Length: 239
Image (cartoon, rainbow, N blue to C red; front, side):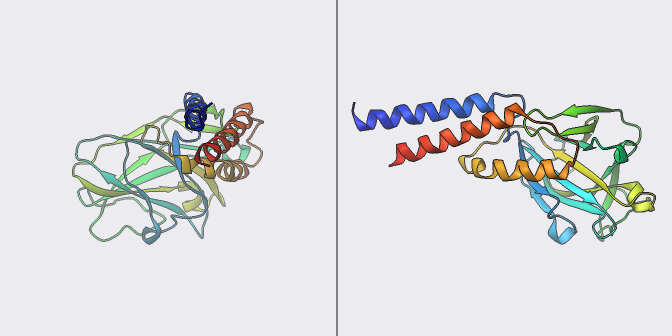
């Protein structure tokens, strides 16, 4: 068989594998991992969300030395931004109620006491989970289990950027020493071949972050095999 035909067939098989994985309800590229408790702890270190047409997720342990997680989001006037908060399903977080503060020049001045300094000229809109319902949520890909709160939305008045700052009011008040929180921003899949290289490491970090709130995920095990086969196929097709 012609070598060019073999390469084409291999690439087609690779894409079939990738599309099969992407068709799962929870594929690793549905949300781009911004951080797993390793960045975004101040305005100067804010993590960038360049578009909300693709999903992003960040994990952070709110604690006295790092009370908040900062994200800088590019916005479009009138375009609603979906946000969702959750905490690992651990007994110590059963009553945790994290919050996210939206910081933007076109918002009213802050009237709440917050565990971080609001930049000069910025107003604040507080999105709290205090009155939201939460439900147990199992992520079939990573094998993590959360208490996930209802989705919230923020609609910017102007095009530009705003900050979304995640924090735990109970940690700020000193009633609990720490709270692990995750936040998703935007929605929509974003797949790149380079993402495959980060899948395994990200999932190990996320499972460690959730401590005992994990289970053995067959989806994760199967997808790792698919990733390995795909990478081998790509290498064969290139050589």
